[in-house]
Amino acid sequence: MDTETTEGPSEFWNGFYSERERVWSGKPNAALVREVETVAPARALDLGCGEGADAIWLAARGWTVTAVDVSAVALSRARQHAEDAGVTNRVQWLERDLGEWEPEGEYDLVSAQFLHSPIELPRDRILRRAAAAVAPGGLLLVVGHTAFPPWGRHRHADEAELPTAEELAMSLGLRAGGWEVEATTSEGREVSGPEGQTAVMTDAVLRAWRLAAD
Ligand SMILES: C[S@@+](CC[C@H](N)C(=O)[O-])C[C@H]1O[C@@H](n2cnc3c(N)ncnc32)[C@H](O)[C@@H]1O
Image (cartoon, rainbow, N blue to C red; front, side, top):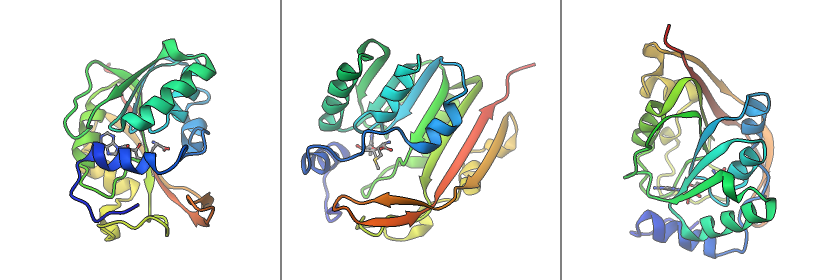
């Protein structure tokens, strides 16, 4: 990723996706599969859905999904993949800048998988709004890097911008009550970079269930 840019998020991410025909593997994120496999399908919101693998996996399991990304290039691939998977009618794809957008309504699952950006991204604000959109009994699942992959040239290379799951729970106010929170760091897993490089990385995994009102 070239991070020396003054572009806005849509220009940056469209440029990023346009560099290759396909960026991500097409497989759903492992943490999402692990957490949601046994949950009854309902309404899901996927923040920064990219090429759509998570949203399509959820839709194929019966979820009704709202999937949001700022990149029209990524979303047009996601739409095509959804059509190929026969789940078009279960996913609403929204091209929005999450820095500006506010979710409408409630969701039983709000998922943010690797919602990171080398350019300005008000992640805390976005995740606060996302948390507010979780229905009683619903799950907020935020998975992020604990360190940037060695092949990602981030302008803000300062890793302090990558909170642990516990720091994120605190900064989102989830420890103040009303939530059952699990904040963990995953086991190391091998990941592949765009040029086929590999590295072992861990993830910050925040699971927060909004407690149902008595
Ligand atoms: C690192 S990718 C992760 C994609 C996907 N969640 C996954 O795990 O494969 C980050 C995604 O966030 C999107 N994104 C970054 N900034 C955004 C913003 N301001 N508004 C909406 N989407 C954004 C990018 O277009 C990209 O698809």
